[in-house]
Length: 540
Image 1 (cartoon, rainbow, N blue to C red):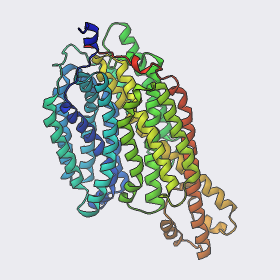
Image 2 (image 1 turned 90 degrees about the horizontal axis):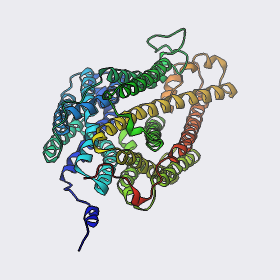
Image 3 (image 1 turned 90 degrees about the vertical axis):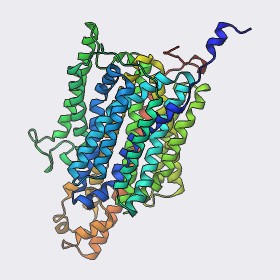
């Protein structure tokens, strides 16, 4: 005869059908984002716009998500997650239609802004709906699937986008986004959720503070290259006593972020409902998980920027070639994010987190030493695979720590914090990697030119060494053909460019490895509970 305790320990298992819709919801956002870089070339040809104008669409999507995701969480709590989820999925479908029929680049920017606003609600909705529909090990598996969906989307978008872009054009890629959006809407009718709580208050002041903070932070980091790392460059819209507006915006964003935290704490002290509950980060374990999430997403974004930059600019190859080169990494992240759940029964989050950061650090150091001017070598691929194992494990792990530490009613808040952190970390990682590599390249080129006796000063005077960037050897030869450089001088300059780019890449990878190594410290503060002690904050 079984006891009540035995019955209580039997976990109720729910149908995985609703999770298909949530899995596709993550694919919807991730595929859209991954398809944008692949489509830049086609958009430039179609609209006759510069690549910088097209890349603005990517920035606007990220700003829309990061700036509004906390507000989106409150809207879901107030009006009901399933209802709001369905509405924004329809809006996302509308943005894909705008992409398919866009007559100008301005339509593309507007479409991605609309998609970002929709994703700002989809991100916390996915977490809240998982918490509502699944518990225990099913919940952990469902959370892991979001990480694997993200990796799968990036991999498939590069492959499909590259293939379609080379044959029929970039627009059909967003036809796939439309089909996925329709499928998500259909599966949303299998989801279980409450009707919402009309008493939930929306803190307009906090929403404004965090929204503006994210916008200026993102703009600051994304324009470090164009506006100047410290001193204002010619491309800066304005300057403050000669200083670049980019670092000023970053400082302003940090100040506004602190103001948001102060305002939120005071609102809680007087008994009012905050925009986001900081209690989900109430202990050092949850804060450590947040720090670890920021670092690993920033590292991933930096690597995703560095590899395509190297393959497309240095080697002069196509986006499809880039997707093939990134396939080992994306595939490894996808598999690891799915299978890491199995290790939760044997190792604590602290052990998994620290070991994963050791892997990412070792992989980056290895890549710094083995990378050559031929990217597709076995040692390089091995380094990408090892980094993918660590990255895939970390993204799923830290997210699971946050969700299992919070009660079900705060799942939307966890989702909003996750969305803000991931999108801000992605922008920061990409921007910092770009600024870092270009700065190192400029220093390498300047030093090499100064020490090279084959390049006369008269030729150096004809080249703007203050605006050094990554260019292919063919582009450099074309630029030097308009100068008085002799063929021997051109060959010497091309060799300097080749060596300087490789040294910049190696140095950049070592700096990223240092950041990864420092992240082992917050990982050491992750929960150390035993597998059978994993908390269930939402018992039935």
